[in-house]
Length: 118
Image 1 (cartoon, helix red, strand yellow):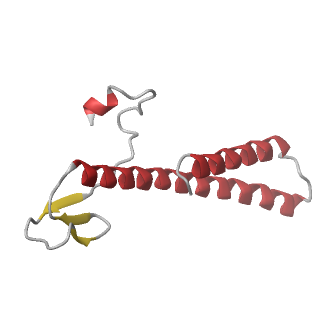
Image 2 (cartoon, rainbow, N blue to C red):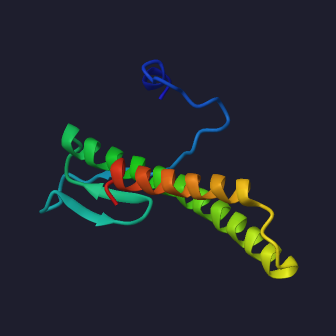
């Protein structure tokens, strides 16, 4: 991981990384290329670069989705706060905040569609 970070354009500060744990177990006697696969473990007949690439891609997408999920939760909380204020007071006074939340929502949507292919 440290060697990969050396090539990062904008590395994440230590302590703020998102991490996943996934175990790969080798079982050469398997009849098929893969055996049992769970959320945190997979058994494979052999460990080659293709298998490592697939697992790495899935783990990267999982970490990205977790980050996007946290962002969506934050956006929903902000929308809820704005709605509650309007409902309570009858006035819309958080125009600038609403524009920021909408812009962040749009950025999130673009990232999910463009970068993750969702």
